[in-house]
Image (cartoon, rainbow, N blue to C red; front, side, top):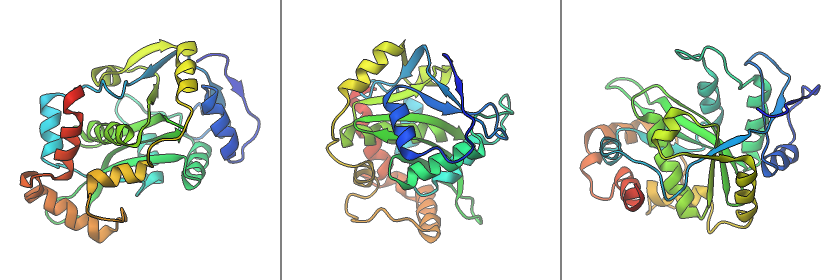
Length: 263
């Protein structure tokens, strides 16, 4: 963290303030999930995943092609945020406070924040959110904020879907903020903040299409609506567990194929 500046305001962070911050290479965090104060972070070193350089192992490609999870976009944005903020082994605390949740949910409603969800169901249970990620999109930049996984490979599958959608939509930069071993294993590289800001400047401009449209082209190219209901989830997850893995051109196979040339 570089020169954090504490804020005395406890209200939702305005959309315009958040977007200005991201365009300037900074973002807000809280000391813990109960703290309603935020501070602004400008990392000295920035992690990004080159969109043409995502590492997808053979085992992960098999998981994708088998459609082990039913994947959605923007179906439960707040649920993903709260799952990312929940205590987990080795990480009892979180920088995602209620103020952060409220602010980014508001940003999501404004169309600038997106989530990808991975769902799984048992034989007699409804679909359960077992993995996902969320982040902020502007111009040709997507800033990944956080991810979680309650099932093996769930967050990796979400990341694969994100990268495939970003590439198809015409994004040029995927920011991961801080380097971790997990991100490094997926192809993330680190650079000075100054170099990152130059990439942001080069990424200013319109994308070819929206993320939702790019997602839909993988999820169901024949459908005109990416809408998703709990009933749809039950049917789709059940199908994924029994037959979707063997259907040529299934969503996971389309994602795996799209990433084949660069991983």
